[in-house]
Length: 331
Image 1: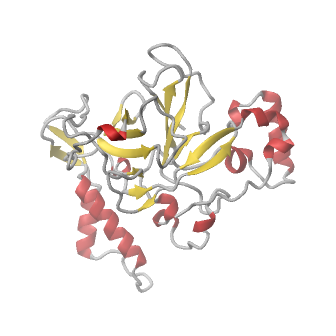
Image 2: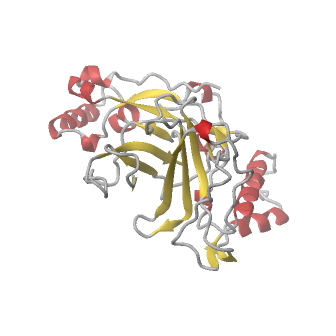
C-alpha cells in the first residue's frame, strides 16, 4: 500500500530562499508489519544470502555464554502484549493473566545463556534497487543488506552494523535459513518483519547545521508563532527509517565525521528509528490518519526497534568508496 506524507505546513525554501540549494531527497521507508520473503525489500525480514558464503558473526562476542534475552521469548512477549491490549477488560482488571505475566517477565529478564560459538548477526534490512531506484550503491550492484550485532558496542553503545552490497542476479543458490543467536543484548535490537512502502520526500539541513544568520532568522520566526511551525520537526528532517537525506542532529552539536580509511567526507546512507512519527506529528502519512489505537502498537512503531532513549541510528558512507568502513552516529 502507498504511504503519502502530507504536504509540509509551510514552503520553507520560499520563506528562506538560501535553503533552496541545500535541499536533498530522502526515501521514507514506511515499514509495516507483514511476512516478507527473501525477494522483498524489508526491515526485519529474511535476506537473500548466498548459501556458499558464511553467515557473519561478531568477533567481539564469542564467549560461551552471554547475558541477555532469548529472541523467541521476545517475539512471544510482543504477541501476548499486542493481543492483551486489544482484549476488553473490566476497569481495574489486570492486563495479563498470571500465565502470560510469567512469559512476559521472562522475556525481558536478562540472564546468562549459552551461545554455541560467536554470536550470529541479526538481519536488520534489505533494499532492492528495483523497489528503490534511488538506492545509493556501487556500480554493478542492486541489493543492499544490513545486519548488526544485537549487543551494545563500547565505542558508541550501539549495535555494530555491517553492510553488504550485492548483485541480485549473482545469487543463484540462496541460503535456506539464517542462523539466529541464542541470546541478544536487548529486545530493542530485534526488528519485527516489515515490508517497506518507499516514498521520496525533500529535506533540508537540521537547524544546528545551518549558518548562524539563517538559524537565528528561523528561530525568530518560530518564536513569533505566526506560522505555528517548528523547523526541525515539521519542515526539515523526516522522522523514522529512511535512506539518504540529512542527519537529525539533536542532542549534540554537529561534529566533523570522515572516512577512517581515506579521510574523505561521509554522507548519510541509512537512518534506523523506532518511531516513524509522533502521534500528533505533521509527518503522519495520510493513509494512517484513521488509526486511533495506542501509538506504540500502531503503524508508527511497526519495527519494534528502539535506539537509545528514542533516538535514531545513522549510517554514513564514504563519498570516495563504498568499500571503505562506514560511520555510525546516534542522534
